[in-house]
Structures are given as C-alpha cells and as structure tokens.
Image 1 (cartoon, rainbow, N blue to C red):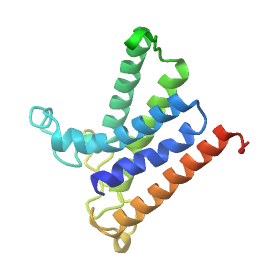
Image 2 (image 1 turned 90 degrees about the vertical axis):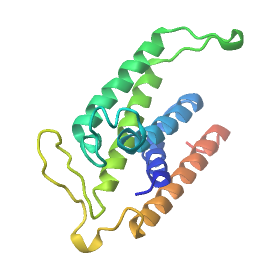
Image 3 (image 1 turned 90 degrees about the horizontal axis):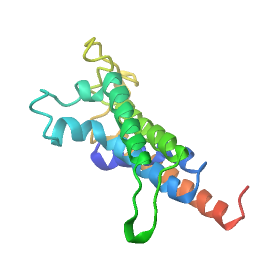
Length: 179
C-alpha cells in the first residue's frame, strides 16, 4: 500500500475510538492512528535508525514485536507528557488518562492496519520477526496485489468513506442531533 493509504487506514481504524471521546481527544486519536499507520514504513525507509539497526523494508519494523515495543514506547512518552505541565500563552494544558489510553490504542490500531494491509500484497509480511521468518498473507494468491495495485485503491476508498462518515457522525453528535 502507498503512504497516503496507510495514513488514511490509520485514521479510519482510529475513528471508532475518536467517536467515544471529547473533540480534543478525538483529534488526537485520528492523529495517533495516522502516525501508527505510517510508522512501520517511516522506520525502515526514512529514519536515521534504518542503517544502524539494519532495518529492511517489511522486516522487523512490520512485526508484532515492533508493534508491541513501539506501542509501549508511545504509552510511556504520553505518560511522561501527562506529568508535565504545559502553559503556552498562559493556558495550562494537561493530558488526562483518557487521552493517554485512547491515543495509545489509536497508535496500535494504526500500526496494525499498516501491517495487515501489507499482508494483502504479493510480498506479504513476516509477523514474528525477529523470532521466525514465517510469512503471512491474508488473501489467497489470485487476490493479492502489488502495493500500488487495485487493493491500494480499494483500501483508500474504504478508508476515506470511513473517515468522512466518522467526521459526519461526530459533527452530528456535537450538534445534538445524534444519540
């Protein structure tokens, strides 16, 4: 899948979490979902850690091990930020427990959406790296696509519709016309 698709998928899988919280926390859910959706490719294609850690594309950065480790890292960073008092422009900002938990879950969901969507491509993924090189595909061989093939377009369309529907539901809820 392409980078835009991974970001949209991350936002789409975070949308149910965003619908359950306040507007500020909801925006964070969508952002953290998108961050999780893009993180595996950023880590192994664009980060400075790529060479020293010997990361290759769809290697350990696309594994359950990395997903758990990175999600714990996000949780830890958000907990640290929760303890800090920020006062930009005289306004005191603080993270509540809801934000920490929902944003961490959104990151994890976005990360999972990335890895699972890559498991639909011809290349598949190796979810148990570095412990096993076993490969996983979620679709039968005739339905697998290149990362820029028909599945990318289908995933992008479904994710876009999901995000638009989520924003519409959230807006109607704020306006008071939705349960």
